[in-house]
Image 1: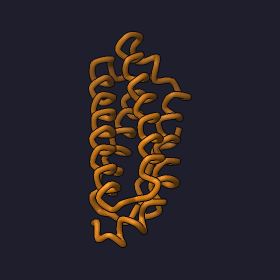
Image 2 (image 1 turned 30 degrees about the vertical axis):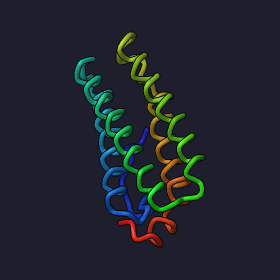
Image 3 (image 1 turned 90 degrees about the vertical axis):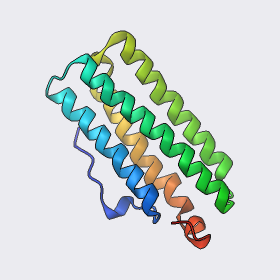
Length: 136
């Protein structure tokens, strides 16, 4: 699985959100690097926990901005976030029980693809609304 590179094509036009997205992608890359280099359960688990925590924190922040801007698709966006977090937390719980083998190539692919699809799709949809409402 190729590393995820942050680039302008992933920008949602709001610097604070872009920085958070970049951090989440960075943590995903660290997790992948750790898997590829054979890091242990404790180290990988720490990175996975950071990824889940950063994602949850980002979602709370993003949804607050969407509410402040009166984004019409906010409820649907929230539902998408809830499903992503359900899946991420499920992977984290499995990791605690089973260990690094949970982070298989398909699971890592899911983490990467779900994030990229969300940023490029759903998140790109709120760009104009946030900018029009002066949210930077």
